[in-house]
Image (cartoon, rainbow, N blue to C red; front, side, top):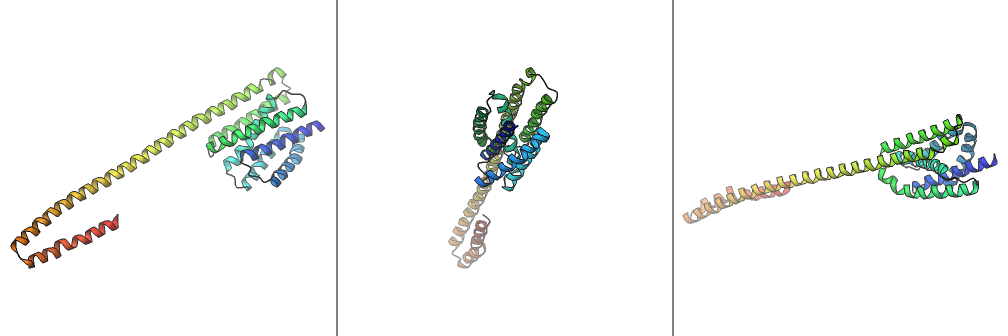
Length: 261
């Protein structure tokens, strides 16, 4: 019984540490200790009475704590679930009878995995399809484990759990790679569409500017021709009227055009 409590408490503490690493040390040392104590006490009691269903309490409490620390819903759920998945896999990978060395190896695997996942999680954040796969995989894992303990499956069957679990993890990793590739492709398409829209807008503005320049060139030639004619006539009155009626308003037109730009 003492050994059972020791292993259970150690695993819960490692789970809290793993979750904290994946969320980039969101918990302070005091909060880390407090959450660890709560899980160690109540989690162990629930594990002894309701066995695997105590997982709901553990994951639920960790999710609530992370949300209180203003972590996104995705991270608040994904980090505890991933930590639990790593623990399950490690339990079946490590084939050591000595409890002390088992915990040491478990700690090493979980900490290394947590640091690796810490760099992966931001890339899939808010990808709730992956999160749903993780939750579904966790449920399936525990269904296998619970069924094995309930019906006393022979070791020949339970020994292939590692292979089954590894297959699920591989499937999730493959789904992650596919979704990431699709997301990258969509971002590239969106970028190309944005660049195309900007190019079309630039082309439209250049065409408008070219048309304006042509119009100005035409008007400018007409003005020069008219001025030349009025100067040749030597009629100062006509020249002054032409300036007031035709040339002077052009200043207001230019100022209005500059204001619109």
